[in-house]
Image (cartoon, rainbow, N blue to C red):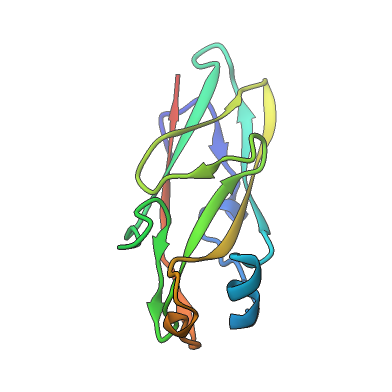
Amino acid sequence: MIDAPCSIAPESVDQTIQMGEIATSLLEKKGSSPLRPFEIHLENCDISTAMSATVTFNGVPSGHRGTSFALNGGGAGGSLALVNKNSGAEIVVGQPTKVADLVNGDRHLKFGAKIVREVEDRSDILPGEFDVSSDFVMTYQ
């Protein structure tokens, strides 16, 4: 149980976002992979105690960009960026992002994840498997 104006749906608590197999040539030419959608489903919100929410995604920031997540594993030259689909803005690792005004009932907070190129020299983009771990903290005002 949590002391909060909204519950977080079970499917939103522990998520895995499949990024697929991303060609290094895509990062070389376009600079990023396609956006993969995910959401945080808030349930049974009661706006008598809070009217808005921020989310903070925590994890290991990339050494190059600093705003996105470092990749773990064999792949190199990229990082994982999260996007607030409501505003289109990239989310900065460890920084609160206003995501929604709350409504009584349910609210779906929509996000996207993409791999972004971090290096200028194409030869520094190395293929390999990768993963990224992050947790999120909801704050209500």
